[in-house]
Length: 171
Image 1 (cartoon, rainbow, N blue to C red):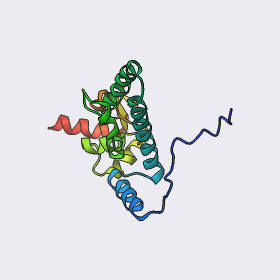
Image 2 (cartoon, rainbow, N blue to C red; image 1 turned 30 degrees about the vertical axis):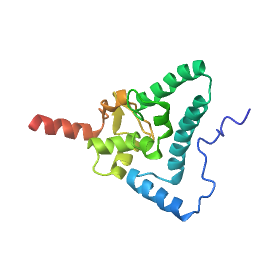
Image 3 (tube, rainbow, N blue to C red; image 1 turned 120 degrees about the vertical axis):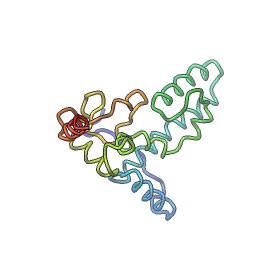
């Protein structure tokens, strides 16, 4: 067992981090999704890599095991919003990092119009102004499931919630 204060890394960095194409692609994604550093991007890539690895191993599994495990994997990915209903294992192999970055709370807050920029969305979340179903979430990297997406709003104690409430009453 290891030291409980030092948890293991949740990400795996690239083997060749200084290649020009990789640097350009990573900086583009960091700007589009408002990521703080490349570690957030590498975490998302590690998660996608895990799902793709499970799909590849299921393709080689015996049919009775594959059938059961495939339903579980695809059900989880549909619930996360990464795949559409009725997807196959080949669709799991086609997942990209951008698909997961689209499901982050920071991106969804920006796309819902609760923040003017992607960076403002990050700040609103970390400062505790955003809630899902009334529960304050302070992690911009929180992966939002399809069920929770409609429940994203300002936290009820936030001054932003009071602003929108007064604007609705005056209209």
